[in-house]
Amino acid sequence: MRILTLLCLLGVFALAAPPEGEPTTPAADGWTVEKPASDPQGEAFALKIALEPGMAHKLDATIVQELKTNMGPNSMAMGLTLWVRVLRKSEKGEADVEMPLKFNKLSVNGMDMLAMVAGMLNNPKLFARMDARGEVVPGTLKAEGMGQLAAQMEGQIASLFSYLPPNPVKVGEAWEIPVEALAKSMGTIKGGKLEGKAYQTLVAIEEKNGARCARIKSIVAFTLSGDNLEMPGAGGAAKGTIHAKGEGVTFHGLDGYTRATEMTMQMKMELNTMGMDLTIEGPAKITIVGGPEPFFTIAEKEGCGDKKEGCGGKEGCGCGDDE
Figure 1: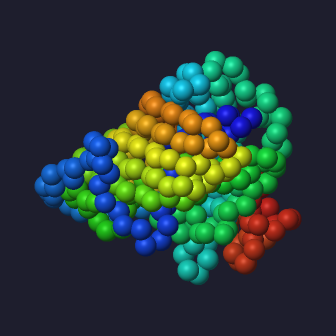
Figure 2 (figure 1 turned 120 degrees about the horizontal axis):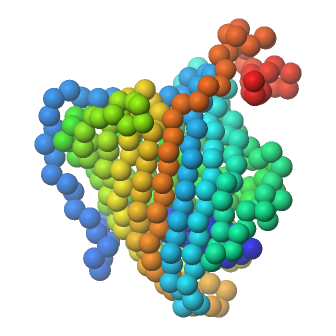
């Protein structure tokens, strides 16, 4: 179970935000990216996440890894469906959401692990409060029916949606984003010093899966190093260096719903954990297909028309129930 947790659910190719105050600079030894040329043209588009009460996102995610380690090859394929249902919104504009999830596929080195994981779950859901950018407000993420997988999945969902620029952008425009904004959306490894760069470009406005979308290209390269890298579920801290470099494309609907995302990463890790030297190298690919899904309209639910505080989260109100 340790290898499953470390290599699959955590996503060893990723990490969380660096310690506060750490500088962000280009990584060494070729693990770098250059800022793309920027040539803004035409209308500026303000991109957003749809987070109004009654709205629901459906996201089908697939993760595939083909890694080489000093203990032999390690492959993993995981399929997961997750719904983000907006229950209510606070005066500050933050949204309370419930997130049911379902594993559709899980195999490690060709061995089917789906039944084992399914046996650990009981109608699994995550609950959180999200800000207007789709980021989970720290301290609000809770798991239900997930047993031993709760901590790992909470880390994975902390940055569920693709990073969006805070200001309107034009086609052809490129901009730098905090490297942790891309890094933390791919997994959870805490501690150490993060060095790297990340950029995005609005390539075009075009149709995707029946919606008018912003096609955004993202590139990132980073190095994480330290003597006390924390990997939940790994059984202890690790010492060493993690390199990663990748690029991806997101089709983000102008209606606030992600339609498709694809991210490919190449990583190289040299770690010592629990007295054992571990080297890991190879590619990982994340694919997401998404869009809106009917949920409910609060005004149509008995007892929910006044949008009372707690409606949607309290038993008996019915705001969070399936139709």
